[in-house]
Image (cartoon, rainbow, N blue to C red; front, top):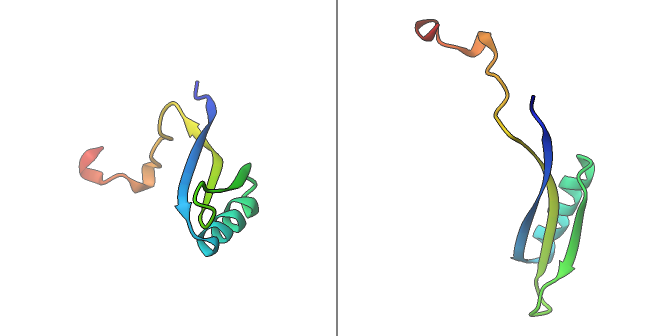
Length: 69
């Protein structure tokens, strides 16, 4: 059984343009994220909760090389 976990991923010290791009990108995909002002007050930190599985999904049979079967 594969359980889904939410792992926080942090982008630190990025400029406003990059932070806005990441915010837009993750919000469109429905991920929970927060944008914080960095300590130097000119850069941003973005924290997003990304899904993680305890193992990789199974490779589709059509993508396997016939020699590997």
